[in-house]
Length: 291
Image (cartoon, rainbow, N blue to C red; front, side):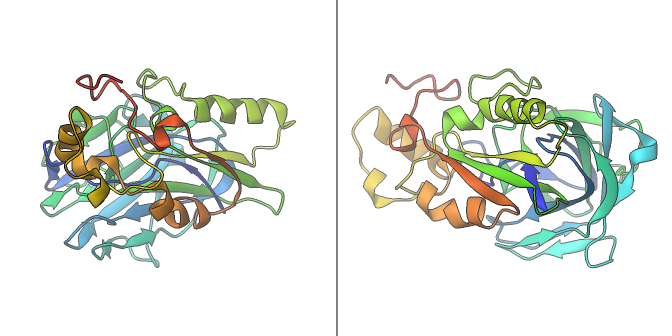
């Protein structure tokens, strides 16, 4: 197996709070970088303090919006069970299912959350419209998804992995704002890791087993965690910004390197860093910065 998308987890920023779901289904759209015929997903509760109950999960090829190709719909299981509980600070991997996964195509992953659930683990800068049902129960298998609202993050979903031969390979792209896609248009898949994935597919001679894992986190730094004492009491403008955003900056590149790169299936290459990995880059999310 080797990874495709989505991005690494981070806590919700304190000023924003964690969005809460209850008896609702999330339909999360993932743009793949590589293709294959067998697929599984990773669900993370890395920053959760309570167990995460997944009442059901489905995976399918997306047609448009929140809708799916019914013929491609697959029920996901966890150790052959249709539901799972992810302990606090833990990760679970689904059982693999057979599905023709397109390279640089869209998949829809649906997760049913039967209990009151705070999205304490999420990837904030998805740059992808994702969908939430009303509090009406399990809609994971709905071909036409009953959209109650949209979100632009990936709660809990941290990986989609496809089977590969010994010739398959993925590149881990570890970075901050530029890698995460800041400044790119929503739903356009035009961040540089997306563009690189398209180029690899075009130049691979039909070999779909070439992937790019976007492990960027906006505002991330190489050496300092979000709670690093090195950031406390910094002068304006950075000090107040660090204090406000806190966990949203994520763990440092060094701290998350093993989890987000070395433990990712099939990673054989690494692209690391940008100027903002050692400082704090100005971004659309933080217009108050003058850098």
